[in-house]
Length: 321
Image 1 (cartoon, rainbow, N blue to C red):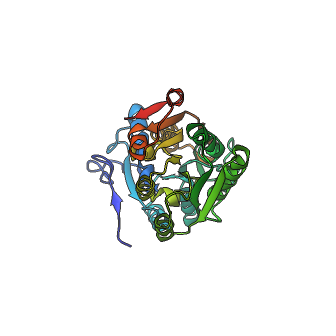
Image 2: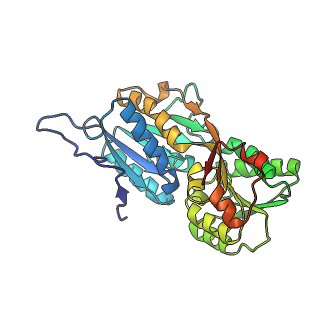
């Protein structure tokens, strides 16, 4: 496999030894499923800096973007374990599951948007019970609220289309919540099952104008890995998009509701620092981040011809002009 490691910032991957005779610099292997999750790592870096942890002398980060490929995550996780990194830091749930399955000894820190107990990552929030701990932010649990907010924005909303992987626990749970919310709101959820990036591209290419009133994303990192294509397709169809990552709205999606992933990464730094100091994951409770934001890309609204009612506009926590 061609190595596709990239470095986020100067000094991200320091030499394993400093001056002659100095102790090795502790290494953190960082694995992100795809580029939309890179802001988590930006936040981690900012949080470590705030704590006085100097990158390059106190720690070295090696960051790998798997570009949505599970096999690449597994192979890199095994390499990190062979090279005896101090810990593997990974996001989101899809990456954490793959890293856990691919390794046997290395401590793992995760940032996930779905229930880590249901995903089999930990035994409980208070007592993780193994070699994994991390931060849980809200993505799956906010599915119904996102559909409700989209309905508030578009009172005439009747049909939304969503793409996701069948058999992937977070996606299945999120799709179920969308169906249940849709019944209460009078909104039909049109489901398209996809199992690869190629199938996502085909499903998006097959979308027709008027087939649905909006495109609605559920908790599926595979679909998120194709977020720019999703955004561009929806714009071409003049179709509003409700997504679960603020970074996708920065890239051109219409609206999102959820945690700011940069802030998730920043808050994770305290637990990472404790692991670097020797704390066992089994003894570090999983923390929950709940700083939610409702975000609008007003430029996208103008491009697709959607008028945002003034009464609705004041409800947004952030408006991207």
